[in-house]
Length: 222
Image (cartoon, rainbow, N blue to C red; front, side, top):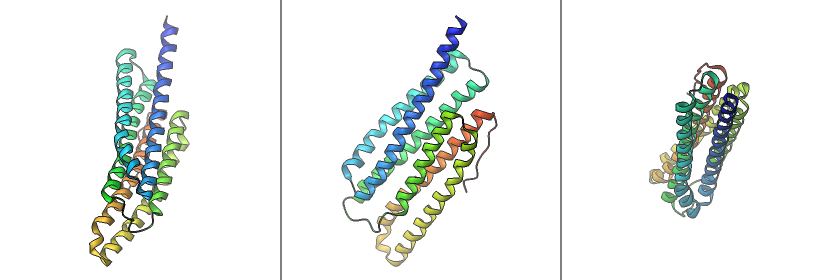
């Protein structure tokens, strides 16, 4: 009986990991679609992304409920407890990244169908780096890859540099023509969402390191 219970618990832990990876995939897709919709001023996709954020939220709450149930019924120890705690934290970070995709969807609706004030170059690149970071972090979580979890956050510097460039470019446009302030702010908000998404990936990496080592470290994101 004891062996059967341990096997069942192991399967439930695997299911938690699988569900977390599924949530991560949903968030990556939403973030990519939001930036492409911004590029195209695709109102239909923007509305769909805003609506589908509820699906991401529901998945996160299901994962959280499963984590709490396992803690209550299995009384996990040491590494297993750290893994469940990591899933709780990671699922929350993923849900918040999903909120950033929804936020970009709302920005698209505010901009409307009019042409953007400048071609999108840096913002899509920010999205590419942030989503690559997230995919790598999910792989590191699955494989409990300590080295990857320590190196992925270094990519956040690239996202920050692009955000600072977007900020400088848009401020320069406002100084040249103050009437552009609303339209520049929309793009700045979108860039800020992507910058925050990369920060959330860094948080995920911190949690992976804690899961593997039991040591909590905090990366400098300034």
